[in-house]
View 1 (cartoon, rainbow, N blue to C red):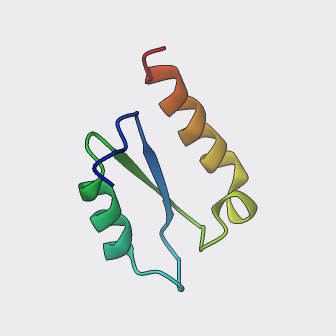
View 2: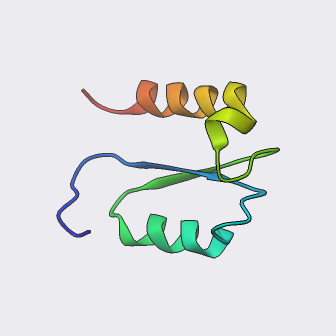
Length: 67
C-alpha cells in the first residue's frame, strides 16, 4: 500500500458485521494521508444502507481534494 500516493477516503459503515471497525482503522493508518469517515446507520453496503450520508462524505472529500 505504500505505492498509493493520492488522497484516499475510507468509508466505513458503523454497523458492518462482515469487517470489524478495527479493519477500517488499520486500512486508514496504512495509507499515507488517508481519511476515514464512518457512516451511521450503514453496514457493509454503505451506499445502499445510507446513500445520503455516503454521498455527502464523498462530495465533501472531493471538494477538499487538490486538483
